[in-house]
Length: 537
Image (cartoon, rainbow, N blue to C red; front, top):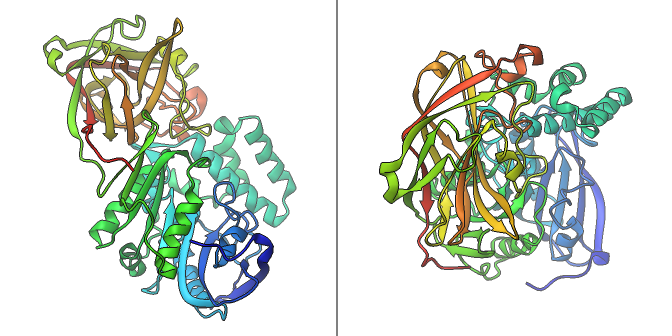
């Protein structure tokens, strides 16, 4: 894996592609000063090619110094490229034109890999035909707009969704020279007013914004079937983060690749959407591209799946996602689980006979239950939620000290019976580990899960299911597990107004008090328990 040179041995330049409809796409290019032609690395993004996703990746000059022609292109309607931007809509067609153009460049040897995360992750998967990259490295992205880009459990991502939509709206304002609207957006984001005012602001300054369509039920699919199967069969390096909202999309993408006959590699670490510190991911990318574009030895270790165990602080590796056994914890409450920290109990399997009871929970829309951390916060990551669990509008169920360490590997699910007095409610849940440290209780949140019900079905006492963010976490012996249940997770999730309507369609003064009744008979928390004798990376 020797390097060709240092960044000062790299030449930087600009190139443009004229599309069949006359729109001109602009790109920045980096290549070694001497030699060639080289294999190419392509990134297509809407945020301005000078950024080149350097918030998480090494600068393109570093990749070029390793012996690559690196091309970062402004997509249609963004940066210096011409045309009008509509989220994902033109990427398959424009991407295929870019692919043919790049293969024909005199300093490209015809071998092309793609890399990038988030929007730049999805552009690697959208192709209008069978000519697809030789390998791809999509990070923190999924294929389904409805299920992987904007909601958990039918509840739209509120803070994340509005912040991203306003970011793109600000770029559109900057492009057309509208400094007044740009300033309004910057002010709303800076003062955190966007959570209350963002929807109306979007309608005023960017009426074509994707979020206005998505939250209104317009789930336009960006996927072009012509190129999808081909790219899924090509070598693929998938990157995910335990605290990233697109993790389920990454995992679904791996499953789709396997079904299509591909052999994807998956790496999931303790990362957020914008912070991959300590992951050595640029080195992982380089080894992957060197193998598939230059014929170098395969990356080490050769595990197809590499997962970071947050509890143990080291990597697990294997040929497949670890197959867990199903463990269960049962719930017991007697109406005091929101006011007495000892009243709600999480019972381990042998104590199932002691489970049952009931609780009531009330959401006051004037002071909605807050949430933070996890995968849906703008400040994502681990958090101590002890103060949140002390609120009376949060039900808590805590286990006895664990008799042995447990490794949770996969998706935790909660199954319970609940009914609302009105036509809508949310369940915003958290799984935590509880430690006693130097005389104080620390409640370390491990994973979150959200689900929403709207309409008359919310009033029926029926089985409800909540799926949590996937995790790999070893919980030590003597530590207690805790399940927390709330009816809101503001501002991560919009406040359910309780009248059958979606949150963005209701003014603040129209929100109703929401009362939910729970029955705990047969209610259980399903835990994916990994065997302890697994290989480590």
